[in-house]
Image (cartoon, rainbow, N blue to C red; front, top):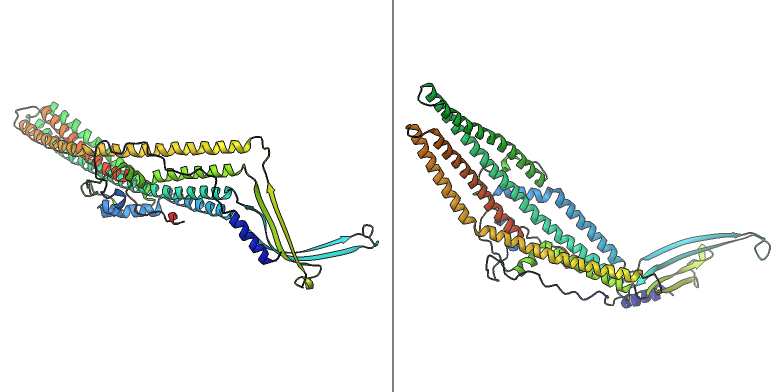
Length: 474
């Protein structure tokens, strides 16, 4: 067998091994959810949220920089990206099993036979030299076992790509949420400081009234309780702002300069546009976590093909072609050609049911992956439905809360004026002030809920990352 014959043998074996696998035909399971969101109806031809990049959704340039820093430095995202590198390498390793590993070998063998074992009674020293090119134990994939394993590794790799997309989208939303929370708590800190300053001023005025005999000690102590309450809130919100900043630093993965900290207030952070909800089928096709779950289902389906192929004979081939001689000078002389050709067939006869158990295990893994895929779809559907339900009433709640603040402010002004004119006790003014303080706190919290709800809806609809996996081209 010369090198040409060996090449033809490998080509023929490769063609024989190129058959279809024994894996079940894959069909995407029907989504176990309704085809409409519970709280909205939208046209199917609306653009998807996945087509809106986060740079277009968020209008705050400081937040843009922070998200960019997080995408470059966040350690969880980095670990997920490295997992893709590992999955890609494992796929390439498994794919390489489909091809023969060709190696070139050269060697020398020297052997001495003692005289009492030789035919002529004299010690004999023999030498041989060889140069070979060949393959060893290459499995010819007649029944698609290696191809099924290759498909399983490919789907696992593609699932890791989708997981990276999901992690990126979640990171964008988490950074935005931390930024919004820091902005809201900064606003609450300013509100507490303003309230403390106002109450300290009222305390000083009331103290002078008491000294002049116009006010009462009861009025003074009532104002003092309001002062101390505001002072307590200032301390609490000061600590909370520091905690919020630490959380933002952890997400960003680097120190956050003061110039990138959010302002106190939430009006300029997000573009609270009317996000198109689309149809559930279109949304779920864009969600990377759903796509990753489907890739895992496809991988489990491919593993069934490998388990089925184990019931059939396996054929392996070892072949070499080269030259051999007893002397180096004759190694490449005419007539020194040498070859070996060792095909081997292995037919499973008895293994105590191991192959059947492996097939049952593979089928069980497929069923588990199917249940996980369906649960992922149901969870995604609920997340979107909840976010839509939350958004549906936010405008009415914000309007009501703003009117509550206005009414409380008017009530406080009137109560304060009545107290200053001696018509009423300070208790009424104190109650009005506490109501105003609580209403203003509620307004900040509700604005945070509205902004966070928009971010959540943007995330669960599949927005936040316009980058698509390059692995689909494999």
